[in-house]
Length: 224
Image (cartoon, helix red, strand yellow):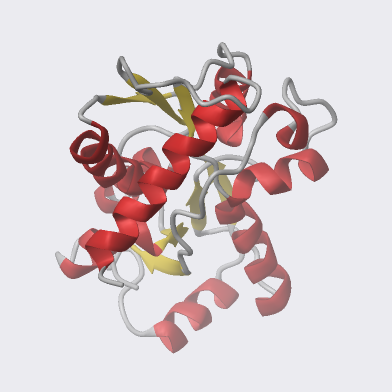
């Protein structure tokens, strides 16, 4: 199956699943007959948003209706999840979840949504590897030189993340344990703002999904 046909199949599955769930198992004829909202729980420029944009364009081609992206960053992705969970269950609100949302119940004492009860999974959109990226001016050299600098200067360097409790944050904490180093965590409202500060040199490194970092790596703005 070609990539194009795969994308079309995913979209048709998502459309059918949303309509069926919204109407108690009885698909609405002619769905969608108006624009659909896609809640993205992080700001523009992050990994989740990077997949939402082409998904939106493909959705419009397949259904003939607009898929409006609603970026709701904050609280490690939990703000957007809450907004989507409380939307009318009419088949006109999608939610672009991420691994962060499977982690959240173990990280937060109380959430305003229940991942298992308030959402219905429709399709796996992407599996994205994580990458450690650095500002090349702050940390020049290869990985060996990077590790030596971090070990010799505990507390001097910092790492940004998409928010507390996200996979970006936990990857940084795991790195600290395994490398026996100390770097300061700086949480952001999403990977997009964290990447901008990394490029500007305001943070030294970022554990990020390759979906959002790839373009900046290719352009030489950050180093993997």
